[in-house]
Image (tube, rainbow, N blue to C red; front, side, top):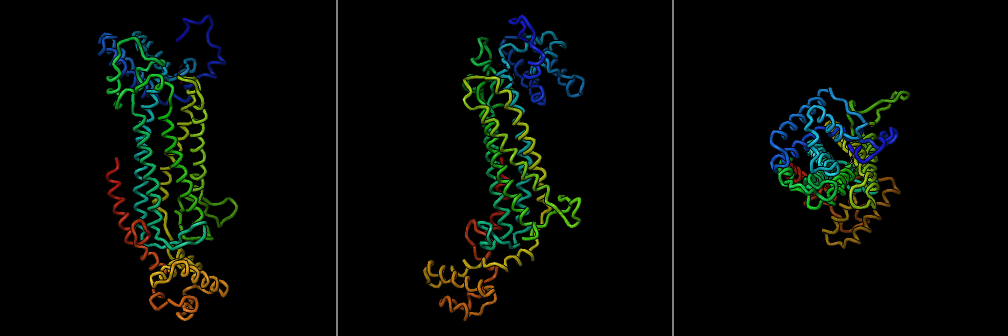
Length: 456
Ligand code: ARG
């Protein structure tokens, strides 16, 4: 493409090193879509004659067919998808040599990538929505199941399993919002920014923007070819999503272990051991957890690439897509497998309750009961703490104690207090907005369904 300036051809070793075909060929359909919009604009503005534009467009569609049907094999001698398509077009239709009028690969790359990214992110939005629905369904299914809630991985207070699922509903809803933000930010059209400073030809940037369904042309041509913030916005979403997935997977892995034992994973999503016949391993969750590290690493890859790059385009930017694909492909597959698995996760309610029996997770309920009888919270806390310590020493549970024994530690205790000392009452009585009370969980599930319906 640039032999006019050079006496010697590019060295083979340099071609191999500098090509980007292996990472950008997957965007061929979007590249052609961008070129068709560009050529239509060139005709509208009188830069090309209408029949020239028609012939170029027909040629581009032919190239698209050839690629779709596997007839056209691109070559790394032509560096990237953009030059391969243009070269093939020009073989089919000599007027193809007019296509690159008022365009540089710098604005072309940015346009093609935004188009492709938009397609992929819309797909991710769809699958993420399905994941949200499944989580909400699980909340509904398990709203009556009581599990231990933890802080510091120590039994804290009983909670509804529905409430637990709702916590992930909130987290993934925030991710969804971030994803939408990324989609909004990428939706401006780079075409016309040229190499860096626009064009002397009378192009119409509004028109190409409209033809490609962007909201507007980008405002500054230098920024347009230099920036990759629209990719970073995706990576920020992916990073946060990955952190959420890693924590969710970890919970389920731990709660599924014999020591906890109240999460049941579907057989189809577990694997056995080649040596130990008794094993049922949560490999899918472990791999999902493992892959989240890779997703986060891809964000760092781009961040490091971009750091301190001079204005405007630099060839370093060619590497921006390698980490993007790696991240998107992984995110999409993780969402899909997680949805399929979560649909079949179950809770062993008996076993969850048995776990609670062993602990003292109703201690706060006792202290709060005393508060309602006028005892200052600090005193109530101290009295309940003393009682708990005594129970531990004597190997007793709260449910083993008589009212007299309670009274020794807390004079304000009465018959009614004994009635609230069950995990069921404990959950039920946390009836405040956002709390784990059954009524509140039901309310949040209903609100969640409405929020899902409203999702844009
Ligand atoms: N293959 C290059 C890329 O993907 C094309 C852009 C080349 N621009 C340039 N000024 N050399 O970034």
